[in-house]
Length: 235
Image (cartoon, rainbow, N blue to C red; front, side, top):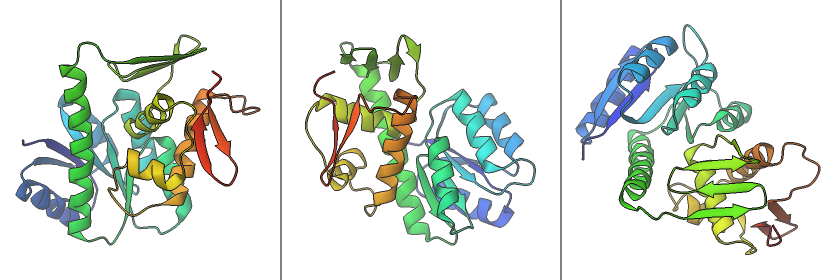
């Protein structure tokens, strides 16, 4: 199935190359050269299944664009950066990016990530449309609704990215069971790419900040020292 991808990158040659690769791969791509143009594209034609976003843009930073995107939708975002600095990657993930690529990168790897993100997003949407009795998990003040892809804490909406939701749902649906970082990566990311220890830790940290803002005690997602993580069996 042909899906639409939005590329936001001020490098004209790279934008054209990525568009050609995506379309040769069977999809369709729009290219925006500035952050605000990308936001306009998204608002006017919001049926994208993936956004490829460069960190360095001429008008506003890619991080600012990412924040605006997350205010509008949960479409997967693949961020591109020319910096090898890990802090950029962590910042992007914390703001809601689903994946990251450092320039220069190979086209095969780029397309593999594009296809994987589109596939997971499409499959999730189809499951939600096709199942009229989707599961709702309830734990004290926390509600996880797979049908609406929503999370409520104390009856207030909690915004999660697609991957954050997948990780939380997997842990919660296996309440009390301990998983290593490697096992979580295999289950939630389905071995899409090589295992990244810091990526898992970043996602766990982000979930905790959103679900347990006081940070004094981890009620829902617990660390089992030297082993891994589990969803608290007593909530």
